[in-house]
Length: 117
Image 1 (tube, helix red, strand yellow):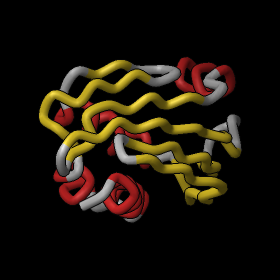
Image 2 (image 1 turned 180 degrees about the horizontal axis):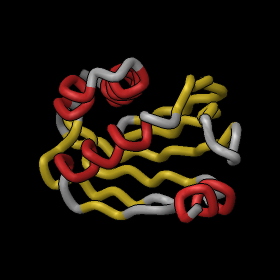
Image 3 (image 1 turned 30 degrees about the vertical axis):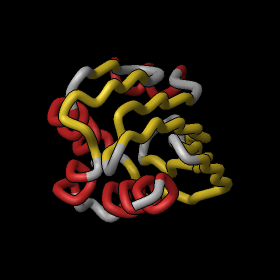
């Protein structure tokens, strides 16, 4: 499976709420760094993703870019929070048939504020 197929499969799984399929795309020792959280294993990351998806109404893909070792996706997360639509960039590294690292970038200001109120 090439990086594009793997990354697209991962996005389709988590946006459809299929967290088992999403987890199967990730290396056990996933290295995740985001605008709010950091994780060093896939299981903890998936649990956080499940919680995040409770506030997401839909995800609108905007742009994708891939190479042999990974890729990047730009999308909008439409949330039920004061943050509203969150423009998000996600960068992936792939090794073999698993995603090994994710860097997630978005302006977390309004989302953090809604989490503390």
